[in-house]
Amino acid sequence: MISLLSGEKGRKILIIGAAAVLVLLMLGTIFHTEKSTQTLPLENPASVEQSLETRLKTLLEKIDGVGEVSVLITLDRCSQQVYEKDEKTQTDESRSSTEKETVLSANKEPLPTAVIQPKVRGAAVVCSGANDPIVREKVTNAVAKALNIGVSKVYVTY
Image (cartoon, rainbow, N blue to C red; front, side):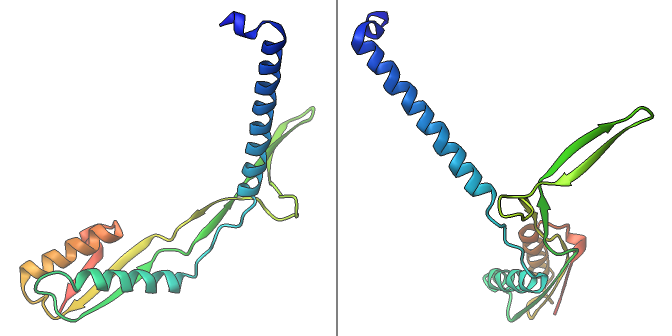
């Protein structure tokens, strides 16, 4: 192994390897910067509710014994965008204070890091087969699992 790296041929291999590592590091930095400055989508709460309702209705219609279905979903809050914060600590003679500032991108816009999706508050389902307790239980469990909420937050009726 050491004999491969000695002499003129070994020097060339080291130089090419070092150049390749530098190129990879530069590409990683470029792609990381581009990715971090992209804006993350914020959705309108009404459109999120409508999308969830449509998908849930399609799911529930496939359960045996469920007839016509209507679904209503309520959200606890709308989407929130989280921005990168930079901490600055200032110390003077009497006290020390920490201040957080929003980090700005190259085009002077806040640097987004994440979007917190809306949380489902509850769901109401009206379906023609819900007069059967077994169908009602299947619908309740399907809604609770699909929305990741407790069964107490699901109301099913006919």
